[in-house]
Structure formats: C-alpha cells, structure tokens
Amino acid sequence: MSEQQAGGIEQARKTAEALEYLTGFGNEHSSEAVPGALPLGRNSPQRAPLGLYAEQLSGSAFTEPRSHNRRSWLYRIHPSAAHPPFTRTDNGNLRTAPFTEVPADPNRLRWNPLPDPAPGTDFLAGLWTLGGNGDAAQRTGMAIHLYAANAPMTDRVFSDSDGELLIVPERGGLLLRTELGLLAARPGEVALIPRGVRFRVELLDPEARGYVCENYGQPFALPDLGPIGANGLAAVRDFRAPVAAYEDAGAEGRPTEVVNKFCGNLWSATYDHSPLDVVAWYGSHVPYVYDLRRFNVLGTISYDHPDPSIFTVLTSPSDTPGLAGVDFVVFAPRWLVGEDTFRPPYFHRNVMSEYMGLIEGAYDAKAEGFVPGGGSLHNMMSAHGPDRETFDRASAAELKPQKIDDGLAFMFETRWPITATAQAASADHLQRAYDDVWQGLERHFRP
Image 1 (tube, rainbow, N blue to C red):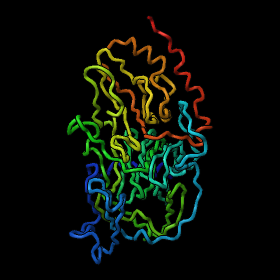
Image 2 (image 1 turned 30 degrees about the vertical axis):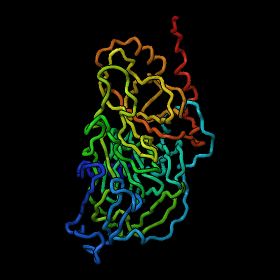
Image 3 (image 1 turned 90 degrees about the horizontal axis):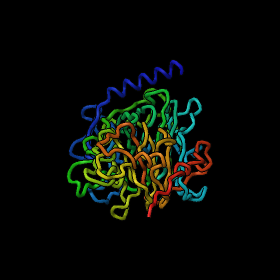
Image 4 (image 1 turned 90 degrees about the vertical axis):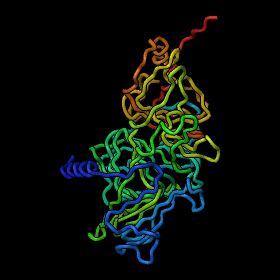
C-alpha cells in the first residue's frame, strides 16, 4: 500500500470517528451545514437562502399515502439539472433484472467469498452480481450483489435509479459520502442508500468486502410488530441519518464523474462540480446506518424454534399483505432455551427464496463450508436445513440454556425465485459439492 493510500485511509478514519448523526427511521429529519441555509415556512421561496437552489427529491409518487411517502427538499450550490448529457459506459460485472442469462435453478447453491480484486478496484468497479428476480424497469423484485474493493472512489460518485441499496459490510469499513451527508458503516452494521441518492465510497481499511441488496420495489420499512406489541426487533431510534455536509469542488475546478444506473445499464457524465453540494436539507428520503448488534432478538421461552420471520430487520412490502418483495433478516447473538426442542433451524421447504450470507463467525445450522463473505441460495421449495454433523450434535445435546454469540449471519428473503447470473452459475468460487453436506443423514426409523 502506498503512502498516499495509507494517508487516505487514515483521513477517512478520522472523519468517520468524528461523525454526528440524526436518529430515527422514517422520521422527518432536517439539517443544515451553514446556519440559515434551510428556509422556514416554505419549501421553495422566490430566492432560496444564501444563493442556494431549492430542489425536491421524490422517492415515491406524490400521491402515495402520507405514511408511505418518501421525499426530501435539498438546498444546494448547483441544481441537479445543470449537467452535460450522460453516455453509456461499461457495466463491468453488474447485472440487472430481468435475469435471463441462465435458467432458474432449483438446486441448492453455495459460493465461497469473491476472489481478491485487482489493485485499484473501487466499490463501484468491485460490484459483482450474483442474481435476483423481477424487473427493474417495472420497479419490482431485487438483485443480490457482492463487492470487493481496495481503493476509494476518487472524483466520482454513483447513484442508482433502479432501486435502493442495502450495503452489508463483511470485511473492512466504509465511509459513505452522500448528498445528504456522511455515514460510516463497519462490519456488523448496514447502510441503506435510497433510490437516486448520489454517493461516493471511501475505505476505512486497506480492503473492503461485503454484500448488497438492490431493492427495486417499495422502499424498505420496519415490519409491523402485531402481537409482539410496541417494542422489539429493530428500534426506530437506532437508525442513524447523516447531518448536512457539502462539497464545493467546483470552486477548485475539479471535475467529477457521475455514474448513474438506469434500467440496468451504467451511464456516465463528467460534471464541472461535485454533486454532493447540498448545504441543507429536510425530509424522509434519507440514508441510514444501523448496528445489527442492537437488534432486539425475540424467541421461544418454552418450546420449538420460531420461524425466521421473527428476525426481520427491514421489509419491502408488496401488494399482498404479509408477502414481502424482500425481507432483510439477521441472526444476531441470542439465547436458546427451548425445552425438548431441536434448536438449530429446522429442515424446511419454503415458498419464499432465501439467500444467506455470513458476516462473522459461524452459522449454527452449518458446521463448515459456510464462511464469512460466502453465501448460499435456497430457492423456493428447495429442501434445506442443518447438515449431518449439526443434526447429530443438536439431537444429542444437553438442553441447558445456550448463548449463540460467535456468529452474525443474515438473509435476503424474497417472494420470487432468484435466478443466478451466468457469471455466478459458472464461477470458480461456486461450491460444486454443496449437496454433500446432507449426505450421511441416516435412517433412524424404528417401527
């Protein structure tokens, strides 16, 4: 690593350590980097304060119900409309729904982590699509990406018109410079970047690796709690939003490449200023970071293993109540106390499709082969569950209270089958012998 890279990482760390946040998921936040930049009493005065431009960023249709409406008012140095034409640029390893390169596969699939990237690979260049479903142009479905990076995004920013991005770091922290301010996301935390919000990714460590869920559908929301009551799972106040912070690179004459993902393709334009120039803002269409270790895990205190829906952090609702376009589920540290209960996740066939990743440690349903940075795909109605070693051990275990605190796993669960990309279906890091983990499950039937 060069002295320049080391200096950039050190500066990013200092910036991340000094960050302040607003709190509360779905709140109507407001923030200004310069006092008096945020107008009061109206959204678009005849002359915005400090010579700024007023601009609304809508993440939902104007007429959606108030409780679902996502929009923010931005007060910026340059209007977003002031840019040259966008032109097509290379998509790299990024793919978008509909996924039609290979047939949907009913087999259980599992991958090792992505190989190390070439030197100089930033977050955008390091995105690699595993698969997904739906249709980005119809704003339905989702995609699963992985990323591996060893360089910051320098003088370029990214925005996704196709969907919001849930970023799950597994190795190395990220400093996310967004239009609305800065977020730091380290392994064990997740960052949510709304549709259309521009951002740049810098690194807090020499290498970064992780997962991304691109949600084409309804924006992620906290799940209803129903009979659970008013508290539990992810708390509203634990989601942190940025405070306003702006760049004025145009005053220095520095060009910035802006890359936009639109209907599956990447488009690029070079601005004569930084688009991260929002001096003040207010609204509900904002980025967040959330610490998964703050998730309030609920579970049985009598018998049986609860369905994994009890571990839902965020959900993207569909037109059918209770049927999610995609759920984000976390298997955080927790106690197991069920009596006369097989405690690991049970054998299962599911109408939903499940992609599972591992952030750290081990997963209690797989003794080996499922490693941090890797992932498994169990499509709808594919039979899955604990491997033979886990089954044998759990069936004979003494059922005393047990703390699961050596792993942090998550799941993207979706209502439609996940079709892999051609690059994922033929990848060298695809585990060809995944089915073997269920071999040796012996017959124990004794009529």
